[in-house]
Length: 410
Image 1 (tube, one colour):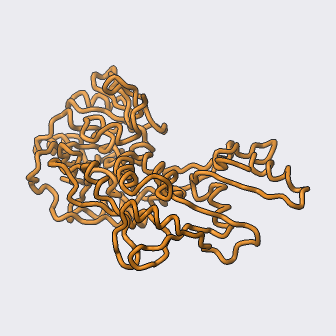
Image 2 (tube, helix red, strand yellow; image 1 turned 180 degrees about the horizontal axis):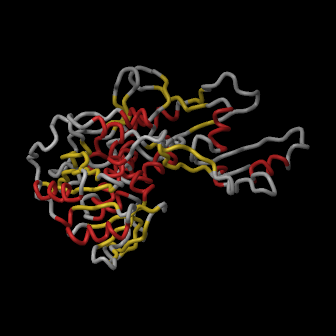
């Protein structure tokens, strides 16, 4: 019996993985039986690989209205779309009360009584007829237990606002592996908004700007952020001189403290530029997060605390992978609405397709991980600006810090 298989120690240079060693201990016994259980993690994890190789059984239950047998999947759990408060946020009490499962055939809603009765008359149904004889595998989401549809819906709406909460939801509640790949084909398909660049917005908002400095040019993105974190692209492009950039910021009446400039190139000179105009210097670091003080608690965030420099400007460090995760989260529609004007430049579209997240295996530990890579030497300056803006918005409390990384530590 191997419980929580995906948490077993990976292979090392000296010996195989703990999972393989355990199986070796039983090979001499003709009547051996292996029972493997675990919350799945990644699709390359041992438990999901064993599930795929087995019978892939799911628990099918009958509809009380039409008799259709079906595996209950989360996509069929629905709730009142009007269950929102005045500020547009979900009213979780009303969501819990209105949530119901809907039959895949007749669309009849099931309440809790129907769910329990259906489970009493359910049976396992195999989905893989090519499994090796004797290799049975089962998958059972949380809503088959004593957890009802209302609690399931409430949990989903709570967790989806956290980058890593959604992964925990998919693994622990849906009994599915997490697939976190934002590839270049998906990134290139930027849906156009029903507005143009520089078009006035009827929402109260502030303009935030990010600048990516290169050898002989400056790339920029200006994004309008509303109080609820909703944002839309206001302007993007490049200028040849820093004076041109400064003039642009003045024309759009962007407050100096709302402008961030990347200090990765010619760091000391960039610090002096930031000090001259009252901007914030930023720098990306390859670390997953920073710990910052927030409301008396230490929480994980995509940015550091503000730091002084000898040049007289403020410096803000950003987690490069964390900000890229945050940007992908916003672009997928999992956070506040993130919109792009319909008349963005071809360069913007190309740059926004410059990075993707891919699966890797750590050679030293054997553990699965995901990391961001650049695609085929594509230019990425405007993508970098959007990444900086996502982290800068968290720093400015336009996007909640805990929503952008994880729940606060107690």
